[in-house]
Length: 242
Ligand code: SAH
Image (cartoon, rainbow, N blue to C red):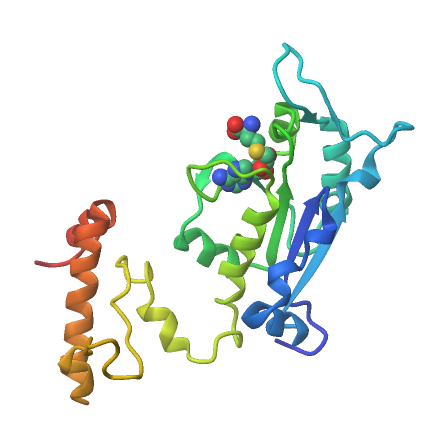
């Protein structure tokens, strides 16, 4: 990175800016944040509420439980970050939503490779559909379960991206061997003590024979993937020349 260049930036639109950096202020991501290897900006959606009660939500048309985030307020918040144009991380806005495309390592890698991310966190029942359409929001889901807000999902997404940024993880090699990077889940790990509660460590790992260790790890990774994730396994097996 050249001096003065802006690092990879996570910009979060939220009703709860005080939730950030939260867990991202600690450990690996926190150290990288302090070292300015990435930057965090929050936009408080409530600031864009215009009525005297500062309301950001209202009851759903058609009835039913809960509240819906108002399109005018959310649109103004989005406009404050994208309408200026050109500013990193650009005009793309991801809306964390259980209806979205499932977040996976390929998307995390793609996002980490760009200038940063604009993330919109929903609360209550979610957003008025019209602002999703009008702003072309890309919906991204953390998984098939429902959170009470987009913030924990945004934190997870950012954490996944930050550890891929240059200089954040010490050994680049760790990344290549990790779960999903080769389309496989990871092999099992062991450390000292060599015997614990009567349980030993696989002999090969103590052999110092790097080629045999590599082969053993690949075998175990394949075995675990085949047993636990048939979906990943069939994709991997199809790509592998057998
Ligand atoms: N009524 C919605 C759920 C709203 S949950 C539905 O049934 O689909 C409130 C907010 O939490 C959402 O707007 C979204 O921003 C966030 N959220 C909930 N589950 C999520 C998930 N699996 N992935 C990403 N964000 C999620």
